[in-house]
Image (cartoon, rainbow over all chains, first blue to last red):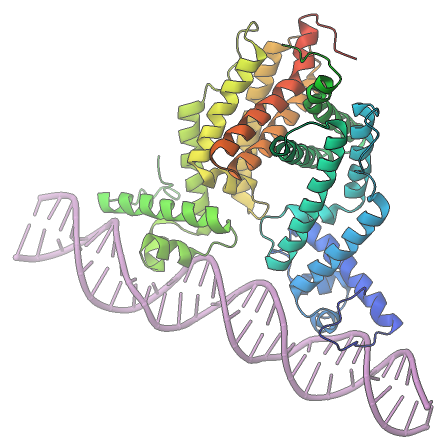
Length: 215
Length: 215
DNA sequence: GAGAAACGCGAGCGATGTCTCGTGTTTGCC
DNA sequence: GGCAAACACGAGACATCGCTCGCGTTTCTC
């Protein structure tokens, strides 16, 4: 369940092996974060983990599998910790609160796991990982659409999809800026990201409540 | 002036040479756009241009130089065609118009030269190109700051910088979505990008004009 | 404690990619 | 027409990277 067992060969692992795997994934995370996926060499990952290249391939069939497993674990952790962050909300919930809490949760996750951004945002990434990426993307879009339609019940589907894409895009742009700064400046950017999303969505929600959209 | 002459060896070029250079840059542009910088092989570029690898290295000392020269020409063309797109505007200019025209110009440029996005947005890009990227980034930020301060004369410098970064980030996010769609859907995303920027900046400009920021 | 299997090593194989070099062709100039 | 320089070629030198293989060590199991 945790590590992929190829075909139907269980390949019994000892405790030592599980430790090595965790160690290798951690090393891979730092190398991926600093150099990106393609530029990261398996030798570099092994060196970072303090083991030989051969040892690395004792646990992973190839470089892609490392990223896959890393991605899987990240996804799992995210779903577990923040799975309900984008659940539909009571339509009476103020927009500020809905956006604010969702942004806070995801920013926290991304700050804690910078690899996530590197793996999902890189344009260099090969086949299988892209599938995971697309799956996550689709999941997030679905959640955002659910959230939006709970706030805007009577929006046309095409607009709903487009608005969701925009929200995700704006979030990713903000995330990049947030990760690029630290301390008070980072907090300021988090606030600006929330502002951008709230103001983007504001007129739509405002219209729902009967407020005239200003000029 | 056009092609880099290394050190002080003029390396006279014939008309044929200039043609080859243009041909190679065009080929490089298509290969870079489709595969990204690092994945693009010099052999592939030469093949795309219909010449031998040796010929390519007659005109460019290495792979990076190709991207540099391509970037230089793109920058030059951009400055020439859209240099004034972000010039400070009359404070009386409606925000919608200022944002709209700036976005339209840059979107048009990026649609016409998709390499630009690939070169500037890739995370894989090596040393020298990053310098160009940063230079452009700084230039754009400066322009945006100028534009913003003409609209918001009394904003603190730190906020000005942050707001400019946000605008550029939001633009890049929107650009990605715009480039990912075509036809009517693309136009719709362009409009959404404008909306996002206008609504993000609206309250600031509104405050300047004495409008109370809603709720 | 003995056998088996998981673990660990590091030299090196094969593929790929950048860039060179020797040689031949075309062009500009007198 | 003749010379020098620019242009063109493509085989291959050289480096890198993903990954394998043979062999030695540790751990589990009985």
